[in-house]
Image 1 (cartoon, rainbow, N blue to C red):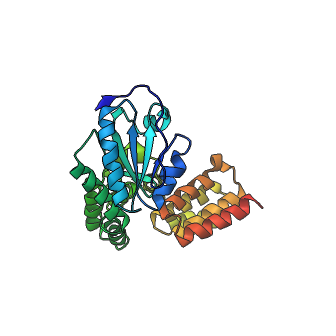
Image 2 (image 1 turned 120 degrees about the vertical axis):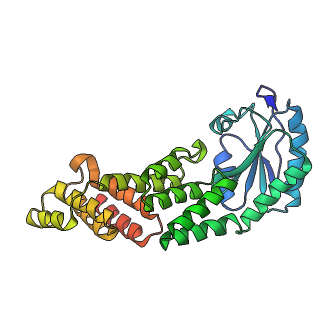
Image 3 (image 1 turned 180 degrees about the vertical axis):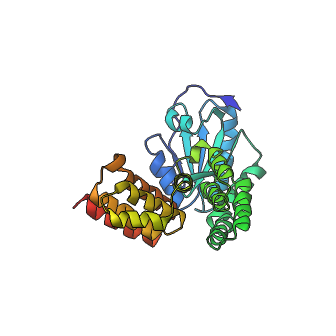
Amino acid sequence: MIELGKTAAAPAAEGLIRDVTDQTFMNEVIEASREVPVIVDFWAPWCGPCKTLGPLLEQAVTAARGAVRMAKVNVDQNQMVAGQLRVQSIPTVYAFFQGQPVDGFQGAVPASEVKAFVERLVQMAGGGGIDEALEAAEAMLADGQLQDAAQTFAAVMAEIPENARAIGGLARALLAAGDLAEAKATLDRAPQTVAKDPAIQAARSAIELAEMTQETGEAAELRARVEASPADHQARYDLALALIAARDNEGAIDQLLELFRRDREWNDGAARTQLFKLFDTLGPKDPLTQKGRRRLSSMIFA
């Protein structure tokens, strides 16, 4: 491997193999990877090993006949993305799929390894293996098979350490099993490249809600306080947390929305903050999330 330096530009590639800049990276790599895996080759014209690896990658991508794409990033002219991904030497190769990094390596490798690398990505894009394992793990988690779900998420992480769905899923499985400390540690160990992924954020929100609901009172007692004094915002807020702890998410959303309707700025907007955390935890496709967001939006823009 060779340390980064300065030199001139390389000519742009066409078709499945393209030159990508800091400005086009989001569209050409992140967004494009939602359709097929995109291999990113960080290179420079002066880099000897890059001249060996680049053609091998291009041959393998071409042979895949559209199942993967390739983006070439000249690090001399595009240092922002290289810096964000902590590229310290070249050649460095990352593979992105579904908007996140899923594989990669550094240095020139033999043609056989390049071929195997591309074949793994092609298989991943076919919906087998990793995707099926993650779907199965989510089903186990929903059914309360917490140990099986945790083991499956962990197995995916062993194969792809930066898979955000696996990291977030393992944290949620540990949280459901009552191991709050290890759930937090799992997220803390997540690579920085996926720290802001929605799957990680959803797990983090679930942990934050769990921590807040540990000290809540009895829901029946809090409900009685709210019914006796509807303007008692603290009691209504505490009731919502107690309902979350009791897994009555619909009831919690109702109470938080009512609190927001009565005083949206109370306690620095606590009602809206907790609603967003709960929506993150439930996920964007959950009917409660969709209905709750619509109701909140109607209040905000009324």
